[in-house]
Image 1 (cartoon, one colour):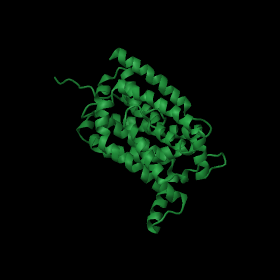
Image 2 (image 1 turned 30 degrees about the vertical axis):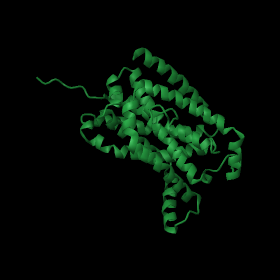
Image 3 (image 1 turned 90 degrees about the vertical axis):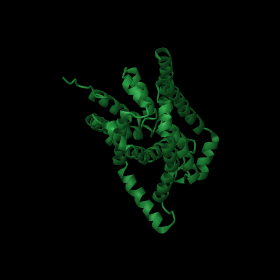
Image 4 (image 1 turned 120 degrees about the horizontal axis):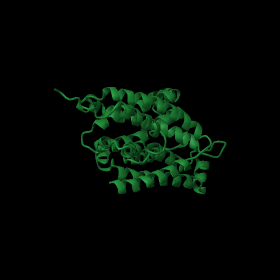
Length: 303
């Protein structure tokens, strides 16, 4: 008599993690860090161990969630992407950059290259080494410090002078399309810190924009536009994991989790774009410091 084998991840777990991924992928609190810490808190130790394994069913599951989040961003910013893609091809045809849409297209290309190259080179190694509860908790605490420091730095006089020189909006902040290509490249390099579980991709990108004189609304817009191709590319790159033997037996769970993640991501980006019109990163920084600190203690006690 054959005994039924329990799936590597249940439908309930896929819904919980899909919701978690859909929200934390865009909130500046690190989706990767929470995908390590929350299963640990819930006692889902098979998932925690799989995160840092050389071959992981959980990575195949996360591929679907990443693609769903990227599609949600693409739908939300669809009008922006139509203009940006059009500007990209117009600039190639003219061999010069003239409009803000054309400039935005090349700023995104410039920022995507270092993040993409470093991700291809180090993503698997860093995940294998650092995708563990204690490491994720430490980096989540560091992420909180980065967010709070970014808010503090943006209020300095030299940042205001930078914004004034570059061209300001009526509220005194810098216009998004005045970023230069060196700044975009530096933002792309900084975003690579998100390869460490606990460091937020959107948080690092927003902080980089803020300290270059952008306001919160433009900083979050640039962060989400930049995240779209990077998240989607990361998912597409891992498609062999999804369709190969690592995805065997969990295709239904992947579909359910992805649907939940996509819907959660869409409503999350709607909320955050409105939130940052009049609010800042400080609440998220405080949350990361508290949650990360508590999880460090938890990890040390229950290791």
